[in-house]
Image (cartoon, rainbow, N blue to C red; front, side, top):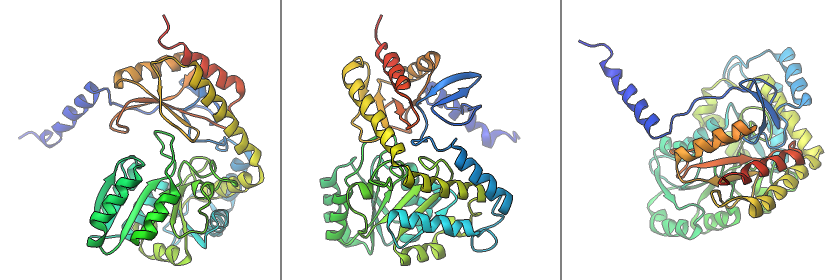
Length: 392
C-alpha cells in the first residue's frame, strides 16, 4: 500500500502547468513600495503595481499605522462581533460612507472576502445572478458560493445582458447584476448608467466592484459611480483598501438597511477576524489624503494621457494595445511563451511589468500599470524600451 498515492496527481498537474507556460511563483520586493523598487537585488522601474497614487510607501500612512498599533496592538484578536471591534473601524466606515455619499459602509478584512460574503448573503438558490465574463475571480466565486443560478454575458455587452434578463428574470425571486467598474486585466470600464437602467426595468439589484476605480475615477476619486454621475442611486458599491488606498481590506457601501443586513448575514464578515488596527488607520489616512490632495490624482491622469499618446504612435506591431480608460494598459501578445520572454526582457532592461497568462486572462498580455509617482523620465524610458521590441 502506497500512502502517497492519493496525492500523486499533484505532481502530474504541476507538470501540465509547466508545459503550458502557466506556472507562477512570487517575486519579492526588498524595499518600500513605489515607482522604483528593489527586486532580487536590482532597482527596477515599477510598472506592475496597483498602488496607483503611490500611497503604500507614504510616510503619513506609515505613521498612522504605527500610532494605531501602539494604541490598539498588532491584531484585532477576534471577529468584529466579539473582540475585534475598535473605534478606528467605525471611523473608517464613516469616512468611506461620507466619501461615497452613501448611508453607511462596512469594512471586511479583504476585498475578496467583501465580495464573496456580500453576494452569498444577498442571494440564494431561488435567485439569479448575471455577471460580466471578465469579472474578477471573487465576483465569480461569490456567485458560485451563493447557490444562485449564475449566467455570464459577453464582456461589456449590455444588449446581451438585456436578452438574458428577458429570458430568465421572471423565473427567479431576486436578481443580482455583478460587474467590475474598471476591469483589472484590460483597463476598460463598464457602463454603470446602463446597468442601473436595466436594473430598474427588470427589478434587479446591482453590485459594482470598484477595486480599481476607488481613488482613481470621479471628481473626488471615489470611483466610477461618481465618474458617471450615479452617486445616490440605489446600488451596492464594493471596493478595496489595498490598491489606490495603499493598505489592506475591502468595503461595501450602500443603504443603512443593506449594511445592517450584511453585519448579520455576511459569513466572511461575521466569522473572520477584524481588520488589523494598523491597516485600518492607514486606509483612513489614505482617504483623507486623497480628498485633500486632488493634484495627486491629476498627476496620475497626466501620466496616463502621456503613455496613451506615446503608445499609439511609437510601439511596434508586436504589441496589440487593448482599449483602456484607466491606469491599466494591456499589451496583448500571441501566446504564454512570448509574453514570458517579453517580461524577462523588460526586467533585464530595468522595467518590472506583469506577464499575465491564462487561465487568469483569455489571452496573454504584458500588463502595464501607471502610478502618480512615476516621473516623466520613467514613462519615457518605458516607451523607449517597448519601442525596441521587434527591431533587429
